[in-house]
Image (cartoon, rainbow, N blue to C red; front, side, top):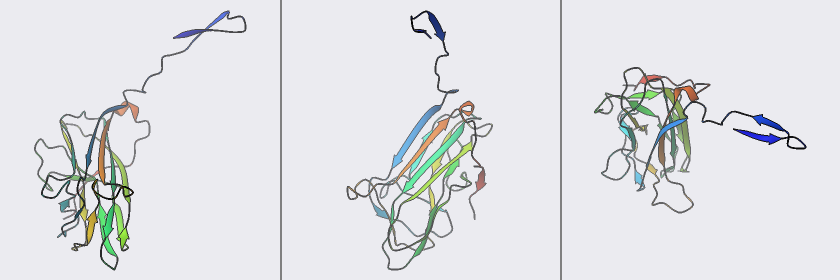
Amino acid sequence: MSRVIGRGRYATETYPERSGGGGGIIQVGYAQNKKSRTLDPTVAPFDTEIPMDIGAAPLRVVFSSVTPGNFLEVDINLNPNNTDAIAHEFSFVAAVSFAAAPVFPADFQIISNSVAGGSMAPGFQTYRSLSSVEIPVGATKATIAVPYNNANLAFITIYGTDSFAFTPGSWLKASEVAGSSVTQPGSGTLLPIPP
């Protein structure tokens, strides 16, 4: 691309076309809780997935094809309410499986540095997690999930889109980003889900 410049418009300046820096975002998937609901107690940390709806499938994003060497970026926003009068432990993590037909939790690994939550005081909280991990060699499909830990108690309610207008719902967003676009990779690695 070029343009004529100068006081009398006598010179031509040529500059490169602007590009997305190596491919950018390849694909994006969203999942959001539609109904607010109280979470079931967990038996072990991260042995249960956040549900998308009552009696429905878990909160997941599925990419039917991915490219090794690209990166998965996972953004989770959960808006829980501790309905008890005392603080309770509540946390969640981003988990991913590259299996063709994954079974939870056996086929899933957590993304390090994606754990969010902690000691949750009574009332409403907002927890956010943003993490990324490189798609490993041999991967052809990716399933992203959100397992949680509520320390064996059933006092945590997750807000969905049916909540009050001023209360944001909870969501999972996953993106596949071209490896050539990631100039400074994060520290995310894949780890086993703790037993």
